[in-house]
Image (tube, rainbow, N blue to C red):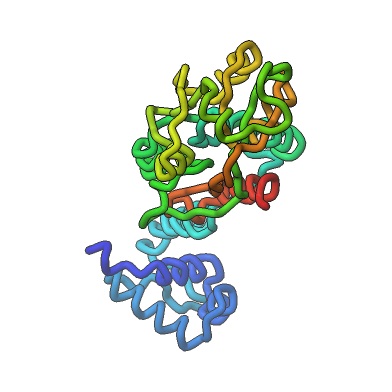
Length: 300
């Protein structure tokens, strides 16, 4: 027998007949009309080349072949009902799940404390880990399933096969140590360009601010280049350097060190922070829950 000839609906009909031993009762059990059930029994007889169920004074009795098939068919029907037909479910209250998020260190500091607090309150068995990687690797991680989500300014992920959802808009501000000898509550363009700067370029990438300044012919004196945003905090606090960073990072630095936030001497470009996911996870129940959580916590 060729498996391509087997209609799953016929197995359901067989299972109902094996249980109820009556065309009428079997039809009622699976929601078919009596003629449709009779037709299904006829197709089953042709498929297995056996009478299968024979009318007797005690009802429709199974042939030896039908009795032999009853157990395996029941197991197949139950397996399909239990493990194939239902959509994947996720219950954060009880499920044990490790979520992997691609994000730079700046987003780790911004997002993880609130995510972990929510996990503790509503998803006690769930865990999270973050990965920092180049943009091309971020796409590959989402495509292969190494990560369910990416968060940040990742324009390279705005392409076919990926979904995105905007969370908030972020502008740039300057940060300096609290007792900076030159920069007070304001900073002029002349002072800004004359100052020594710390610049962060994760993975060696040029960022939106660099492009913005280059287009205007503005060149900073970069004394130190860094690959991680969080390295800025002790460096700025202990020197007279200036760093121009996204506002959310500046707020974090100001909360944890003697650092002041100063508006830059130009209209800052705006970064849109999104969460991204690959289409393979678009309907995954656990991933849908995580994206909903991130948007509730951080969506504008």
